[in-house]
Image (cartoon, rainbow, N blue to C red; front, side, top):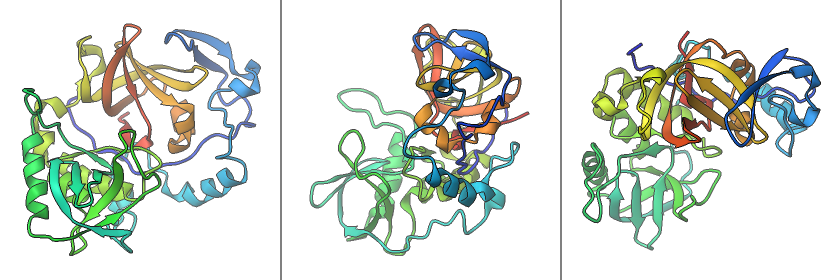
Length: 321
């Protein structure tokens, strides 16, 4: 399987904790090592039940959220946004939260404002610019130059904030817009100079960004033309592989640890979904993945002698067959 598929839009759903015996057998994964054993689902204590739900996100809020979002579930064979719906994929600014002036461009996804704030562009990631003698990653210079050309001649830009104010590096998170209302992230994605980076709960332009990245993927534009971004089979991965990749593989088993749900692909590749992120996935779809061929994208790391990818949102996973 060598094709690159496009990824689906937002799908938020989970299985209520009181739903009984949805899977007769599950693969339970040890929390210290990704080790699997089969147990009878009906005998699991409720607080450890597969895809169990607890916490303030649920109850009445979950029910209302589920009803509201039910219409937007993607089909299991569709990577595009729903019919590329113009409204759902809207990139419109609406009311800006702030106007500002950019004085420095660090790279394709980070800028500095006149007041000194570092702004990390929400929803995208661009290759890293080389520093301290280290070479730039392929595509880094192109992304930086393109962002510079977009901003050149504009005294002010508009900022739109999302659910979180800062990232872990204390950079301000924002969606950026040109004076004419053009979404800067969407432009970079459409040109294939950035990859989509979906980090909940900052999702207000998710469908917009997926729509534009899907177009770049379909036309193999920019980064998507490079070998690094071509899909790799999970059974052929080198044990030393690291960084961002698109991986295709067949699901061998699905299981759980105390904090996470695990999807194991052939070739000793484990996909981890933290329980707190289950609300951003279609849980019934997850339960039915065993034996299916899927494609995922994300950053590969090695732990306990296996390759792992952390998944935070349904948009980074797609069922092929």
